[in-house]
Length: 319
Image 1 (spheres, rainbow, N blue to C red):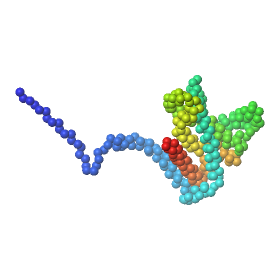
Image 2 (tube, helix red, strand yellow; image 1 turned 30 degrees about the horizontal axis):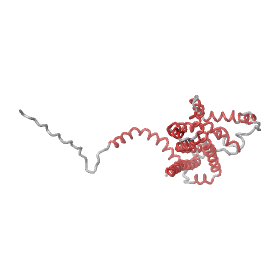
Image 3 (tube, rainbow, N blue to C red; image 1 turned 45 degrees about the vertical axis):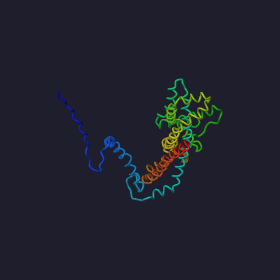
């Protein structure tokens, strides 16, 4: 009887590599293949964002005219003129003032509507739709609605409400300096608060229910639960809402252009309308580009500083 012995397994041969050259990792292979998929986006991004950004920066250093004449290199003369232009600073102040007036109610009203909708149990979907629906309307429709139906002096809905309350109607909501900006702010709040409401509502639904149940068992009332659980859990959402709202308010143009045209006496003209007037009415494309890049620098600073401050406050609270 013969016995056979199994041959020992042959050792696995490792792929030879050149000295100093590591084997490609799976992560690097996926990275290389991923670039192929994102290449079309990168091309479109470069064509419609990077190239216009660089082209506009170069144009801001020339005397470019909308008619095609000029175009001589003037260096930083346009920027020096813009910094010394009082109309630039007045328009910038109007933009900042609108941002201050609109951001606070948009955050607070959005939070209040979200808290109310989160507690309602009857036709909850109807309340959510009613508060979010205005945000879906085009800006032209909203501005014309308020300009032609809400704020006309004497017969608008706002004056009719004043008369019903026993107050004196006939206020120039869009023709008097002390009311024009407030009217634009009221229009903006009614129109855009639905977006903040939706963000807060999503954040409220993500808060664990057992936190409220534990607090209720410990005897915490509704106000204590709101102050010690809900608001701290919404801190990050509030920071996001504030940043988005500030950036959106700084870019105001439609409401002012349609409702007041920048008046009365340029008291509501934002910086973007001034850029539009200089570029397409005054035909000074180079100067308008310089003003717009100064404003772009302001928006960039705000978008970078605000998250840094929020992160620092969060780190200090965590200590």
